[in-house]
Length: 364
Image (cartoon, rainbow, N blue to C red; front, side, top):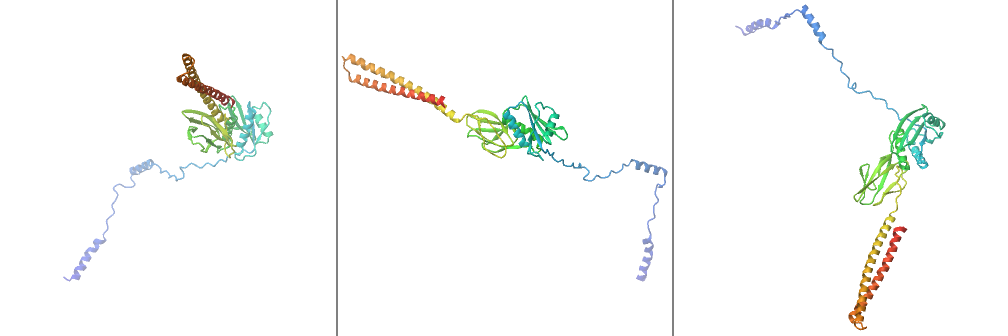
């Protein structure tokens, strides 16, 4: 058979097969079956609704607007209580220094009020009379210091702070008053600079923390504790830190701390003066001179006794030899006279030392 005929025959047989498609299968369960539709409705009811996705910013709390610091304006100051005049005067100066640091502060003033002024109405009236926007009232009673801040326009108290166990020392009372006023008026707080000088061998601690001699330390305004350790002994003392003015503490060896005031821009440390160091060494020298006088007198008594013994022995030999001195008697006679001169010189020196001891001990 012709090859071309064979190809044509194969092509004619294959074409119907290539054009055939798979018949569409009928579903086993009709779509309109009642029981199928009922089950589909139940499934739709059980399927929970999809929750909308939260945006990334939804979990963050809304930002609160910044609250501006309260401007105090003109501050009037009242100091109440039975305080000594020097303490009251210094406290007013300290409170004025704190009021100047407050936000929006104007020049503070000391208000005048009638003698019994113990309630808010009286304080507000004093503030109105003094053209003050706020009144700062400091009251002291039974070692307790209380500070109140009143809004004159609103005619009410807006802040309060207090401190117990406050002494009437001017520096300590002022430091506590400034610390309370800073809480009420200055949001950022108040601090001051302190420097403590101590000789070699003295260990310092400030509020329980080591402090090097001459190291400047910034501290919150108020009263802190300074510990001084030397030769196995330890003493503590209060350390007032003030806003206006400054002082450096100088601690002498084996003596309480002393203060030498120097000008500085930040804080104040005040201490009571101590006796000068000259008193200590002069008294010590007096004691040493007295001891030397006693020792000289004792040696003088010894030489006086030996002198008397030698002279008596020479005199006995003179009488025993019929009114003549032997060489041994002459030696004893010379020895006795020499010891007598030595005893007299020691007695004179003892008297001089005793007089010097009395002068050094009691006169200086």
